[in-house]
Length: 317
Image (cartoon, rainbow, N blue to C red):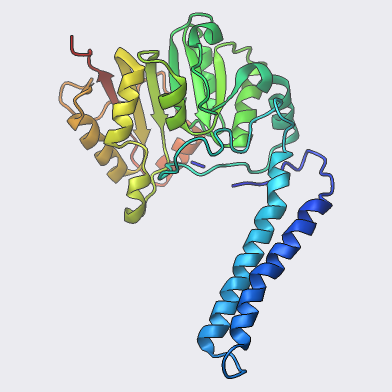
């Protein structure tokens, strides 16, 4: 799933300092290229012209990035909404299974974020371990990774108020939409987390603290060279297993056939999980997982949806 677009509902103040600092950077980047092009026989050759063009393109890209950064940071004042980069540079760079998503936020989504983020939102900064008992009043907690616009999450929370749902995503409009749905339907058992689910699992959740994990329709990264970015990999399963209590269920769903095959293969081979299906295959869609609009669109296109439910096996004694 997973982008940085400013919020059109928020007033934007001019940033003259950002523009003043960006222009000298572009000039400095162009100077070496110009010097290289003027050296030698006086008329730049093809390689020199190409180098100058690349330098100018890099300078322009840096200029655009510099101009955009303050706008992204101004989407919500600190503490009143999700951060553009909650973990910052505290953790190692790695292959990401997502891309940050900060596209346009509606007025209603922005109001829900400002109203509810301070009490129901969590930035995944990796700097503390969450007290899930305090956060959910002692309810068992299921982690949902990737909830889109949050409709299915809200339906599941309403159908099962005895379970807390910690829903993580990087899509700002979806975060606001889910908080709005939680308010309108009086759902006290939903919390919204913003950022990298891997950092959340590894740094901010205690061992055996989850009674379930849901990964519905994750980014399939359909190109073969991008398959390494898919979330359901042996390394992810090993991490997730440490945070799932024995007997907790990992529930995945996808409408990409070869991703479903990969999920079934890696889950079946992992020593910390066992298939809830006696035949070792896919699971019929359970009633508690709503049929989402996204899923319906896939079915209309002829996609076949596969559910997989694997149980966390007990820890060795």
